[in-house]
Length: 263
Image 1 (cartoon, one colour):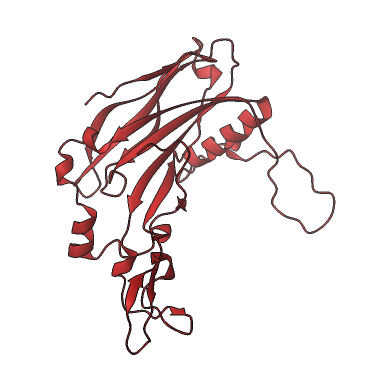
Image 2: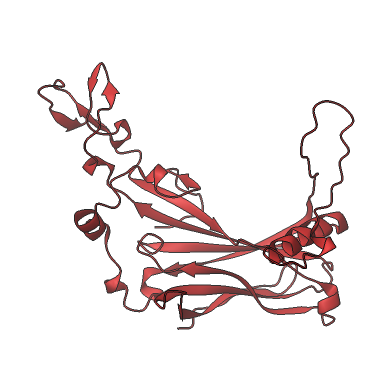
């Protein structure tokens, strides 16, 4: 399935797109479904050293009020439910009476996922100045990520020479994991020298000269047969998954709605 492409002409013409919904077999033979995120870019007059970073943001809900079996001490008695649910025991520990006193603070959260490896422009590998279909990341299809939709933002970052060397070393080191021929370039360069105090690992300070970002949404409707994705009710009632605070469900969680998010 082809999704609409997003184009930008400042500072360079470049495109963020997902060209298809992909199903590939994993090591167990089952199909892993997902959307592959690519970028087309041209360096133009904006420099020669770039890095592309992808950040995906999705919203999911949980049902912490269905959690049972633990005593949460509140006001000197068991509340029986996590305080963040907004439900309070106005009775006693022996004779509880649970009522809602405020909205739930841990039922709806937003989470961030990132591309796991640096994606860099290497001039020695591309003399045309065009970077076509650079693979950034695969967004897996799961009932949590596609409970609603995912906001995909790609940033094109123009780097200084030192910054580019740093990230290139990071990339080479990650690519060499498990190889007996790990390259010397995989060693991380530093640009700080510690002159006193306890020795500590400081890599340095690096910065970008410019950043340009584009974004797109991939919605639940873009998933073939979204009706087959398990709902929160199904996950909770069948597997008891999701009976936790949404802040504990996945890493990089916040219960504060991002400014860019549109319902």
